[in-house]
Structures are given as C-alpha cells and as structure tokens.
Image 1 (cartoon, helix red, strand yellow):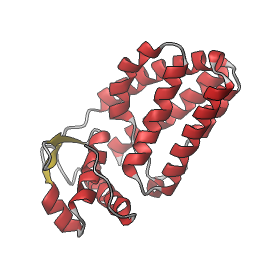
Image 2 (cartoon, one colour; image 1 turned 180 degrees about the vertical axis):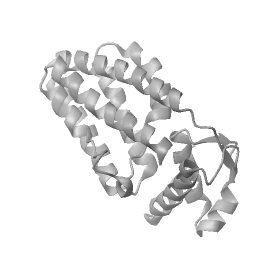
Image 3 (cartoon, rainbow, N blue to C red; image 1 turned 120 degrees about the vertical axis):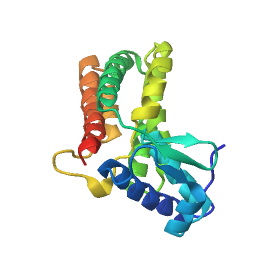
Length: 218
C-alpha cells in the first residue's frame, strides 16, 4: 500500500535521504548486502519513517536495493551487462510502439499523451516527489504502448520499466548527459511520422540508458 506524505516537506526529506544513500551505494561506500533498516535511517537523517520508506522504495526502483518486508532493504550487486541488455531490449520494444502509435494515434489520444508528458516533466523539474515522478514516467510510456494497437507488448515492457526507470537527478546533470524531456517524445508522436516518432523515442531512451550506465562509474 502506498505511503502518503503527511506534509509537503516529506518528499523533500525523502529525496535528501535517497540522494545520499544512492551516492554511497554507487561510490562503493555502501557495499553489497548492507542492510538498510527504516528506523535507524529515519533517526540518522532526522526524519519520520514515511520519508525513509519512500527513499528506500526509490532506491529499489533503481535496482540498487532489494526490499525485505516492511522494515527495510538490502543493497544488491549491480550488474552492468544486465542494465545494458535490458536497456537495448526496452529500446526495441518502445521504438516499435512509438512507430505504431504515430500511425494510428487520434487527437483525443494525443491530448492524453500531452497531459502525461507535461506532468512527468513538471514533476521532474520540481524534483520533490520521487514516487510521483516515477509513476508519471511509467504511465506515459505505458500509454504509448496502449495506443500503439499492440497491448500485448506491455507484459514484456513492464518488468523492464520497473527496473530501468530512474529518477534523473537535477543536481548531478552534466554537459555530457543533458536532460531529456518527455514532451520531445510527444512531439515525435504528434508528427504522425513513424520514423520521426521512433527517433524521438530512441533519443529519449538512449539518454535514460546513458544515465543508468553512468551510475556504474560515478
């Protein structure tokens, strides 16, 4: 069951915990099999259990920890080859979905996609709602698959998104890996040109994959 934030400050505290723990895991300061327990984490960062829980779930969404019951998680071994392979597979599925979506999308569906793209980009820019941003991101990509006319693609894509959709950190952007907005994918679909839509999707996913792979060398 999702944990609701009791105040507007909670997401910001969750993000602070998430960024710090993420940095420690990616740098190797926090090694594989390290146990993360909610109550000690909340105490260390001076927050409530809800903020600690949201941060841990965000780490799990990035594939950095494995949730263990309701009390915490454990740092897992990162697999560079798996991330790369799953990123390529995701690209194959979503670029084909974008082609087909561009061919058949109607104005009402485009309006839905525009709203979803605006939402995820807005949440990303605000940077204070980890779970909301991730859910909006997944909803945008899922809707493209639903509109492409081959909904059977979703069961293959869903587990990839669960592992690969990451929360791009505005604090850590570099000129080598610039931001990539969902509205650019929408514009590709709006063109109703299958190749232009596929190119826009490919560029978007290549950026996401670059961010995921870069985390191995942080």
